[in-house]
Length: 370
Image (tube, rainbow, N blue to C red; front, side):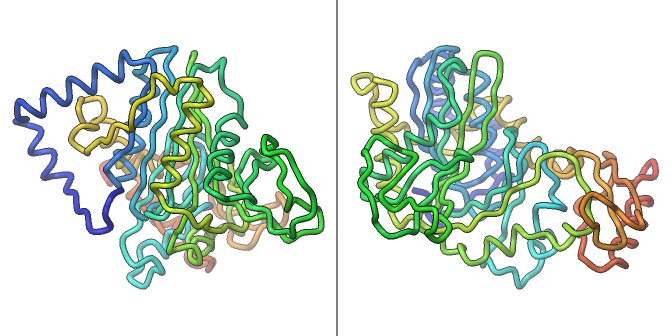
C-alpha cells in the first residue's frame, strides 16, 4: 500500500513524460492495450493522489470493452471528495481546510468526482473500491453486498447493507440467528439498538451500456474524530442550494488491515462474476503507468482545476440570517458560480462575512479579473 511518506511531484513527473524511456513506452502500451481489450481487469493503484485515481477510474469506465468487468482499488492521502452535483460551501468547512491548526496533520485535498452521491473523507486508513460492469448486470446493492460478504469472511459479523445501499455495522447485542447469505441483516440487527455505524458509502455513474459503482471503506482511519468537523459547513444555515445534499451518519472504523480487505474483496469479486479461473493477481499500477495517455493527463488537470471544483456548483442563494425551512429571509444574493471568480472563497457563519463574500463575488466577476 502507499506509504505515508511517499512524495510525488506533479511538475517533476510532467517533465519526465516529455522524454519517456523505452521501458516506459512499453509499459504504457501494454496497459493501454489491456484497458481497451481485456474482459477481466483488476488493478491496485500505488498512487495516493485523489485527482489521479479519479481520473484513471473515469478512463477505465470510458475506454474498457462494453462486456468487461473491472475491479479497481486505491487509497488516497487525506482528501475530501464531493459529488458531481454538490456545493462545496454547503458540504465542507472550507476555512478549516485552509487553517494551519486543521485537525488533520497534513494538507487535505478537495476534489469533485464525476459520479453523484454525497461527500466523503478519504485517508490512508480508508480503501476505495470501484467495480465497472455492463449496465444490464448492475443493481444498487449488488457490489455493496459483495463487500459485505468479503467483510464477513474476515470476521466482521456486524456488517450489512442498509436501506440507503450503504454498508453499516450493527451495534446491538446478539439476538437472533440469520443466514450467512442475508447481507441485509445480522444477528445484531434490532430496532431498539444504538444507531448502526456507517463504514462504507457508495456512488454510481451510468453511461450507455456501462455502469460504475464505487465506494469507500473505513478500516482504521486515524482521523475518525475529525471527519464531522471537516464536513460540517458553518455556512449551511445561510445557504439554499440546488443539487444533492449529503446525509450525515455516525461513522466508525471496521478494524481490519488494508491488505486483508483488498484480498477478501478481490476473492469475492471473482466469485460474484464466476471468473476465478480467469482472474490472476491484482495489477499494481504506478503513477507513471496510470498517466500513460494524454487523455488521463488531461483528466487529472481538469479535476485539479478550481473551475471544476467550485464553478460547477449548481446555483445557490445566501442569506444574512439563518433560513427557516425553505424560506430565505433577507436574501442577500444569488450565486450563479461564474467562471471568472477567484476561487476559493471561504464563508463563515457571521453575516458580515457573507456581505464581504457578496462584495468579493461582484468584484471578481468583472471582465478581465480572475
